[in-house]
Amino acid sequence: MTLYQQVREFLKRTGRNPNQKLGQHFLIDPYTLQEIAWNADLTETDLVLEIGAGLGFLTSELAATAKRVVAIEIDDFLYAELQLKFSTMPHVSLIQGDALKLDLSPLLNNFPPNQTKIVANLPYYITTPVLWELLKHHRKIDACVLTMQTEVAERIISPPGNKRYGALTIGVSYYANAEIVGRIPPDRFYPSPQVDSSVLRLQMRDTPHVKVENERLFFRIVRAAFQARRKMLRNALLQNGVFISADALNTICAQLDIDPRRRGETLDIAEFAALANGLHRQLTESAN
Image (cartoon, rainbow, N blue to C red; front, side, top):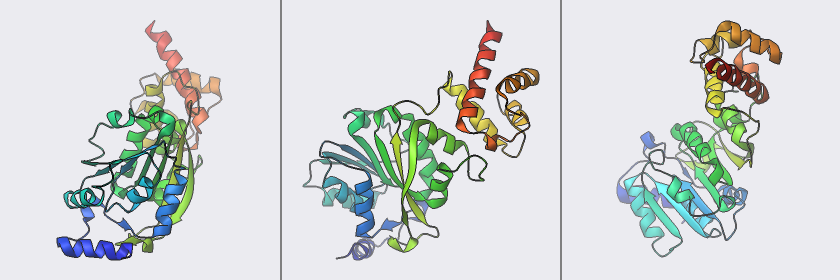
């Protein structure tokens, strides 16, 4: 049976329809599945964590090479199907649950970081929170290969000044090199989504893209700048939780040759880092 026929047979047998609430769109093109696995650059020593295993089509591709595959699936019916499909493959472990609620640390601690990959056809509605969660574990991961809505993938690689450039762009760039390595039209899924999809590869950096003295402050500034992206940088920061006086902020911006009247969306990651470091030093001096 083709993958499309397998999906239809499963739905008929279980009397179900794809769960729209869970964003279920089954990737049914074998070539695309092979390309996703190929872009993960798997070896026989790798651990692969798959988020949203579905009917196991991608899981099978990953299991053909990787030493161990851990597949997470939230849907009861799909999980039961996966148990049947991989019952004779001891190097494939299945977890039923919500990836956003699971503690990934125990899973990622089992292998060296340079042998740990994340591969997933992400449901569109959880793409952004999953990305932020994976970035928290950047030291334990070598690379991620993630299928997502093209709009989100392009947001991640957008340059400053682009309307899609935002906090997610900065966050990913800080921890990883990002590259779109594939495009997937809607007709390669069943049911077909209303949007195009892209495959994004993240290669985790050994050290962050820029040096910052206080990461929490750095990301607070980034988020504040984009929470009010149409406002001047000065107003966006002062009104969104960056606790410093307007005069002090103006002084720091002058020292860095950053016009505080610019919009935050025009600053690149190096400028955000310089601003965060300047504010950190000012706040530290004020506290002493």
